[in-house]
Image 1 (cartoon, rainbow, N blue to C red):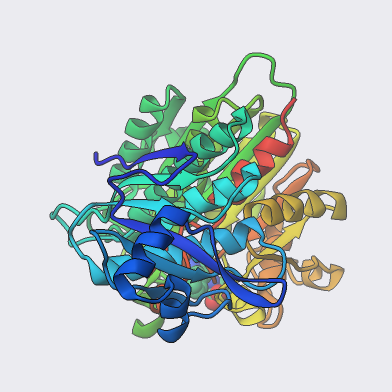
Image 2: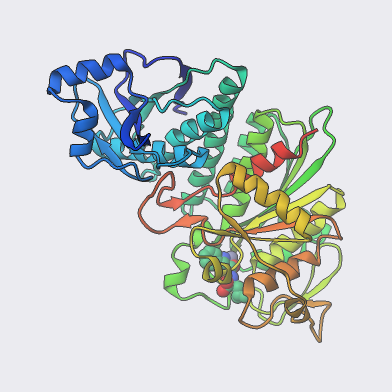
Length: 495
Ligand code: BES
Ligand code: MN
Ligand code: ZN
């Protein structure tokens, strides 16, 4: 695998191909931070005017998102990114650097570059943001079977700080970006290539590399243990379901976090088949599983002091002669019976089994991640994920982690009204209610399988997959949303 080397330096290395500098206001006038004076002198001599004047002439703005590339001079390109006018947050840096890198990619395709980020970064969190921005912004998913065009060869983050925390920030960024990009790759892989068996195999291979313990239940093992939800969803497909369990238990860990992910490798809707337009992107319906598998690997690589167990529920939701029907009654893992309200509400069935199993381990906190409902996208749009939780303190834990990671989550309630819709005449529970508030109904259903353990549910149906053009550090296709939040959560629960 191609690895970009990322390091910290006090100055701009000689072999730089491009230097990213920021445009901000310094006491009311625009200024370039942090353009090394030697480079500034050199460019001023060549152009007969200052690089700042050239940048402004080419339309560079201080506004976040603005990116201008100056003409090459002496083999080096200056990339001027807007940093905003007030204080610079890690997320602003992440976006600005990614925009700079993406602008370079449009200009210099297929030539691995040494990119230098020179933004006068001191605090570890902004250094981390810069390195993540470069690595996430450079991501592209290439044609099946072909080698990707690598944009980056070396990334150097220039910083006056020589503190250990600064170096650790770079190390963390490299691991986190690798986890996010792996998640993106899995999501982008078409469902005829990535299906439960091959997805589980990929989870095993990468987890073993990360020295994690991993176990796969195949359809026979699932049947033996009574995973009725996963089996019901998977039984319409020629490609049988899997449940992957991965565990990380470092010495000295006091807290135990369980992460549960929805791994529907393709969601046709089943017998309640989806119209073609809404089906087309449904290879992304395994995003939650990809996210939690990558997250535990990053957590292990960073050696965080917390026990983590992952359950990734993998199945393909297909219509066929062997598919489950709406109104079927399923006996779930743990014995609860469920009336299947709609075969397109498959996510909650596989997640309920996995949650019930995860709860048996008695973790301190359950967090599930799923592209669960279109209703959540209607409520919050395509760039904000929904968060529902057993209690507000748990919700706040997640919101704090999301804020630290720079990801957008918004809390939705689980009201009594939606819970009441889950009453069935023929089973303990019905898997859905009426049309409105569908994200809440799904959460209310999942909560029945959490055994009273603190629990948060992340509905990433909106932000998991970007159907539009790339922006900031978000590519087209799989985005890898929530990996960074889960790692930040694990960091906050260490001890
Ligand atoms: N995988 C979908 C949800 C989804 C929608 C993900 C859009 C990503 C983008 C899920 O399985 C589903 O089909 N949900 C139904 C639930 C309904 C039948 C209760 C929905 O949202 O319509
Ligand atoms: Mn569905
Ligand atoms: Zn689905």
